[in-house]
Image (tube, rainbow, N blue to C red; front, side, top):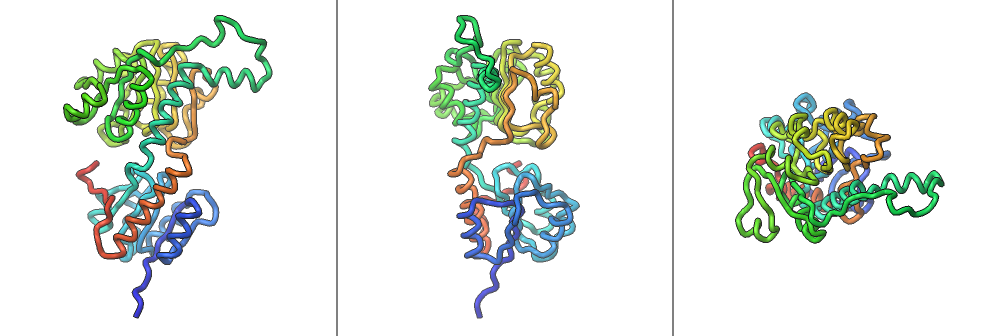
Amino acid sequence: MPQKRLSVVVTRRLPEAVETRLSELFDVTLREDDAPMTRAELTEAVRHADVLVPTITDQIDAGLIGQAGENLRLIANYGAGIDHIDVETARRNGILVSNTPGVMTDDTADMVMALMLAVTRRMQEGQLLMQRGEWEGWAPTAFLGTRLGGKRLGILGMGRIGQAVARRARAFGMQIHYHNRRRLRAETEADLEATYWESIDQMVARMDVISVNCPHTPSTYHLLNARRLKLMKPTAVIVNTSRGEVIDESALTRMLKAGELAGAGLDVYQHGIRGNPELVNMSNVVMLPHMGSATIEGRIEMGEKVLLNVKTFADGHRPPDQVVPSML
């Protein structure tokens, strides 16, 4: 008698190739539109599915997990970040959690450099001038920005993405500095030509650019709070492609308005998809809609990781990208 196929519920539209392969392997319920599931829809999904495939837009908290049926045994997240999932509660309820690490490293690092260049070279201001038809010709003192070469880059979080940023920034001639929960091995540090700072305060006070590349955890919430932001040089720029909660966005907004920071490049925001409204019209701020991992190749590779995790679980083995609370 053939084995019953796993019931898999996918909460958002995924690349067509990924959805096709999921349909071939499992009894899958796909999303017809690309709107996030409502709480009621998520509750219905966890009550009946064997596997849930959520994204960052789904809050898989203790209350939702408490509604899960006895069949739900795997939450195979489509994405590397899992701060929207209560991993500890899932574990206590016998539900495994997996993610998709590593596949968006280069894409996100590319975006960090793009934001650095966009802010320091005032690209948004130039583009708006062209779109409005207001450019009257070249002038020696118009749109003067700063070059990246020779500047000090401070990286908060030196994991895969932080190291990829360091390699790119070094090619631009930047000096690499970093703070990390654990210091890198000496050979890695030497390879990156990176200087370690045990004190975040001392590092941020000396940097020309700060790149936020650490995850959102209880210990990194408002890691760059008002006091630390005040330590930065008024000529400094901050770039965040990680999680909005790492920066006190209200304090950042006040400082940018007051000219106490030179600019910011943001791909993530403290309150979901809505950044501080005052940031939107600032000429020295570049805001993107969470595009760090938005490449065709990256999103397909994320889907392939999900497929591998679910297929391995279906075969009775531990998913290769299982997340455990001790990793957080």
